[in-house]
Image 1 (cartoon, rainbow, N blue to C red):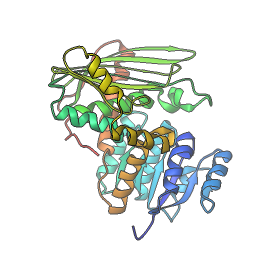
Image 2 (tube, rainbow, N blue to C red):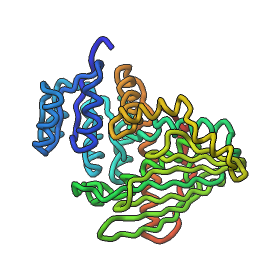
Image 3 (cartoon, rainbow, N blue to C red):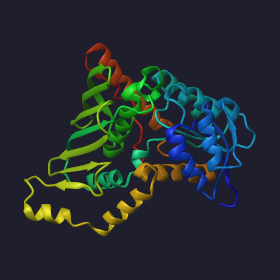
Image 4 (cartoon, one colour):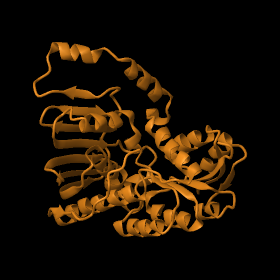
Length: 353
């Protein structure tokens, strides 16, 4: 690019400082002009990585900077709605870490404000850019497992060593906004269908929160998912169809696990043990990536390219709103103990990176 995109980083916690700032600083088509965070140690680390960057303790002050074309927002979840509305009002491109907002009401306000503009806006559902999930989607749509019938997933995290705000409902929305929002978007990305009904069980204890949902996705697909904190780091997705099943573990696997209708024999297990060239390449990419996950760089690249071109970014505000709509229904089912049906008239064309 002939002109560098002037980017501000709003929020410099673990995701901001360990993932987003290094990725932004390494790009020749980006100039990080300002970083905002109330933690002075975080700002000092940012200056050590980008010596000429300006730092602010208040994200609002940073957003008012004249030398901004775009912002990357990695603030606590409770601030997402306000920051998104402010960025839209400021007229800059925006990469907003998921979720879109901490309530459906705020997410709807962001959606309505953005719809009145032509601004580039992306929501950080980076899982869409994970090579294995992209491959899973391709194989499902090619009919490799037949007609999808069951989607199972689990996303769990250990207790945070830093007392993270993510586990406080008032600041981070708990596991529903931190974890479930990813899997809601992932389900729609994989299947191109809407969630139509959910039932929820939620258990909270001193060491964490556990939420299980059983539901239905359009077309008669059974959805079973679990999200938890205070357990282990895990993120597993499995889709079962009429002709086979396909599975991935984001933290463990370098390739998809596929099986047909019968129990795999010794030859099939041996073939899986021999790494293909693309498996080796993916392993190297993981090793070089922040948090050993290349999807962050791919998601950010998608946004930066769109922002340079002043084009639409995917997943964007519409996808963020859709996720918020389903998460809100899951939360309602947990509060009431009753199944919640979603409005099936709400449709969006399934988009992909």
